[in-house]
Image (tube, rainbow, N blue to C red; front, side):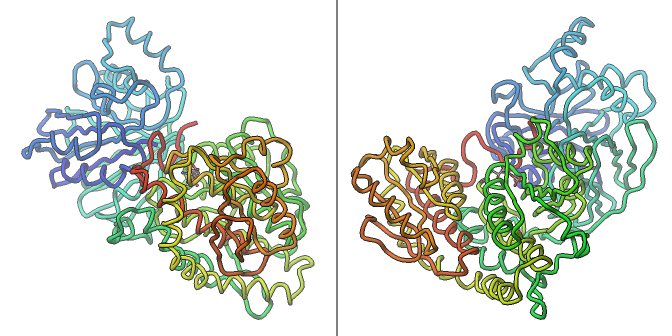
Amino acid sequence: MCGIVAYVGSQDAAPILLEGLQRLEYRGYDSAGLAVVNAKSLRTRKVKGRVADLAAVVPARFKGGSGIGHTRWATHGVPSDVNAHPHLDQEQRIAVVHNGIIENADELRRRLEADGIVFESETDSEVLSHLIGSTVKETDTLEEAVRRALKSVVGTYGIAVVDSHRPGEIVVARNGSPIVLGIGEKEMFAASDVAALIRYTRQVVHLEDGELAVLKADGFNTFTSDARETAKEPFTVDWEAGHYDNGGYEHYLLKEISEQPDTVARTLRGRLDDRFHIAHLGGLNMDPRESRSFRRVKIIGCGSAYYSGQIGAQLIEELARIPADAEPASEFRYRSPVVEADTLYIAISQSGETYDTLAAVQELKRKGGRVLGIVNTVGSAIARECDGGVYLHAGPEVSVASTKAFTSTAVAFALIALHLGRVRDLSPADGRRICDGLRKLPEQIKEILTQEEHIRTLAMKYADAPGMMFVGRVRGYPVAREGAQKLKEISYVHAEAYPASELKHGPLALISPELPTVAIVPDDELLDKNLTTLGEIRAREGRILMVGHRTAEAADDCIVVPKNETELDPILLTIPLQIFAYHAAVALGRDVDRPRNLAKSVTVE
Ligand code: AGP
């Protein structure tokens, strides 16, 4: 949620920390702060607001070769200067930045206060600086002090710590919140996301839960929580700094929507086999016999990832004829799920760090479940935790609202469904049909993007509605859910998604000229049923924007997308809804890339 960045080396830390924080701002952004150590003195600045507000109060001569920085997304305590990180100990010797939630913070706080410690902030994180501060005097190393302090902590954390008595050294630790180390030339970096490091280095090391690392300019050492040194292999990130730029677009969201012809092509690249009309997915780590052995597929993910999982379940049922369903990972993990040996579990995550999804995967693994990941971020926690999976190769997604990762996930599901289908009963002819359909997607997405102006006009027409209903049947239903999700999260217009078939069972009561409906109406075997639903809405004077493969009299407005294979149509039907939500949000003057109350990567429960 929040962002962490740390630097130690021969350069001044402050400009590097500010640049890193700017790159992380999409993760959490109600306040920001940094601390640098110079010749045994600790200097900090922190403010409520954006990184630019922090940069404005950091003096030009803010010297120091090691330091830590943070962007905050409030969980405990309102956004304010005092609640911003870093937090210091009583003697102002130790500074700590923290992502995650300390569950026993109240109890620790009471204990520390009983020892005479005075707290400044309302945050749970401040207990960490005081705990480390009171331990560091009794230990020989900062690492030892951090390790001892963390022993009394219950909860999740990614932390970075500096000690003014030890300039040139940073200790970081991870438990449930990501920490990645960046290896430079006589300098070391750490961050909660590679986005903050990529300008300086592409050589990275991910910490595991329970690990600590000591960073100095000339290298790093990693340890388990019981002080055993661990050996880590660095790997090279294939994303580049340029991938994080907005490429001249007004918003990252529009850039990411527009990238979809390429990102979909990248998800497909090298994975379609024209000889057997099957998908090659080496990362699944399963031979055909194993692929045939599953009797059920269960898909988990959060938010848009979950909706893309619903498209995935439909694809798997249709192409592989295996019963499949999707469930929010945030619910799944808490309901003590029955885990079966002949069920294939698939976890979806763009970031690979969503805590609820990670916890669900861990629960599955603990019960012996076989879990595949569909993940965008290489080397992320969920990718590492899974038994195998499919990387999306969609490149970094910066805007809070997911777009290109959503379509690439749906494409990855089509590949998995094709694979599972072709080792079962899907005929070579149907396999070829799906392969051909998948290949057509990038060009068809380009065609949809040419309709941006038409969709913008419609968005402006409907943007002032107090709310919108989204409906779809079977394949169209997850598309409707994702369309409603996009609209509500970036434009703040209330949007509700319903199966079109359910309308009569309650929500029809809401239909009036004030509540327009977006209807997903593909040309499939349910077309007539959908057109009947449009008639019912029309009869109640509801305005209708139809998204489908043709126009219809019952609709006030239509967006027509190119037809693909029926099973793959949901992927294309999603794209006009992204463009619609984007332009509605712009028309309403919203902060499109950083919608209020949200963060890109939800690394807390
Ligand atoms: C998507 O627009 C949302 N911002 C959100 O629902 C997101 O998809 C969800 O939090 C899951 O994120 P993940 O894919 O990184 O796990």
